[in-house]
Each structure stands twice: as C-alpha cells, then as structure tokens.
Length: 127
Image (cartoon, rainbow, N blue to C red; front, side):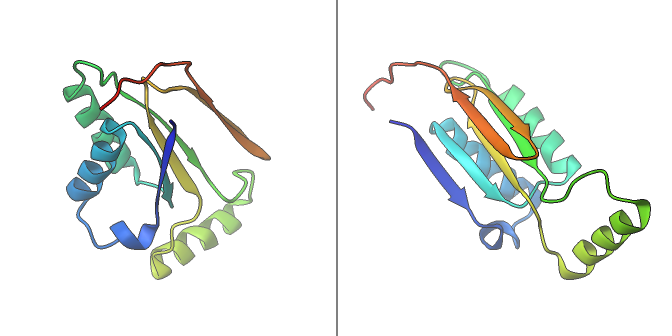
C-alpha cells in the first residue's frame, strides 16, 4: 500500500531546521511519501540530503525530492523582487515539496502543468 503524508507548513513553521528535517526523514524512513506545503530553504534541503546519506543502510536506500514552485521562473526581475519581499515579510511559503523513499519512488517528473510520481513495482514486507 502506498502511503501519502501531507504536512501543512503551519505544522512545521515554528520548528528548528533540525527538527523539521528529523520529522520529514522519519516519515520517509517509515516508507511514506511526504507532501510538504511550501518549500525547504536551500540549507535545509542540503542538510536533509546529508542526513539521508548518513542513514542509508538496510532497506532504507535514500530519498527522491522535488520542489514545485507556484510561480513561473520566467518573471521579470522586479516581479521576482516583489515576490521575495512579500515572502520575507509575510513568511508565506508558496509551492510544495514531494519527498519519498528511493525504495518506492522511481522518479519524480515535473513540468508547468503537472507532476508525475513514478513508483517502483515493489512487494512490501508485512510489518
């Protein structure tokens, strides 16, 4: 059975980066595909990948991660600046992040109109 775990940004907004990463990694290690409202910042994403690499063993083989921005990257400089300022002032996280265990997620494809999560054909052990 495929399990999706939605995490609203409000649930992790007050957490430190380490606690955020630990929560996400625990869910993924339990073979959940995490749908995170908003995005991790670059340092958090780097730390998540680093922690993942440190914990690879047994059936946990790593993660697949994809960030979807809500705005098109082809905006003019001034529009990007307004968006950054708005995000900084209101602390609003736009877009979402998909994180899944590499043992289940084969690939995550994205384009402006859709996201495709391709899974592996895996027989799961009874827990």
